[in-house]
Length: 285
Image (cartoon, rainbow, N blue to C red):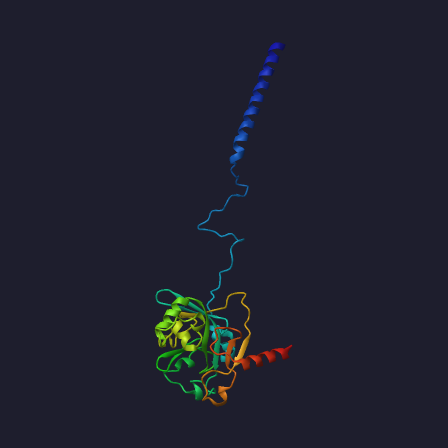
């Protein structure tokens, strides 16, 4: 009996050991592909209906560099100064973009200004753009062949004349446009500093003509204004008398022309005004 009992006990212990080994083997096979239970949260990637962006690399929607209507809605003098450093962009029909940084402007104050086309409050089909909402272009022709480009400001009949640009992009196209339209087209090639150094030159180089009159600079798809690049220094500004308005009496001497001091792209430099500006700056300190 004792022999049989010992054999039976040994057999049972062997079976138990075998079951234990099988259980451990099964556990090791399932550990690498464990399925989550209904009581545990799923830690895998969530199902999505479209591409997702990481919150660590996403950024707010970038703002367009184009200046909107609110920029133009200010009186002519502060607007003329605010234009300096901003970038005028012209997109041609073939998609070519011409760019120039504004370095010189003139302010025209409306009916009280004896040099303005709106002096005395007169309105004509020609100057209607001066009385339209701020940011409206007023393009007029001089000498029967040249154009000048103005932008209306806050105040009836008030506007800003764009006088000169620093060319930034599309210079060869500007050169071709200027050579085609200027007198003596067969002469020497224009230097860069001659491309946009004057209101009519600017219009030639940017292909601006009477068809742009009364367009909205804040919304037009062929010409618009962009803010100066981030990090740009605020330019030193000279206030000088306007150019070519000798018949305007005392208004001919008012310092309503503004330009970036030291810029080689300015149309007319006024040394006396620059010295006066420097003297005023020195007094401020």
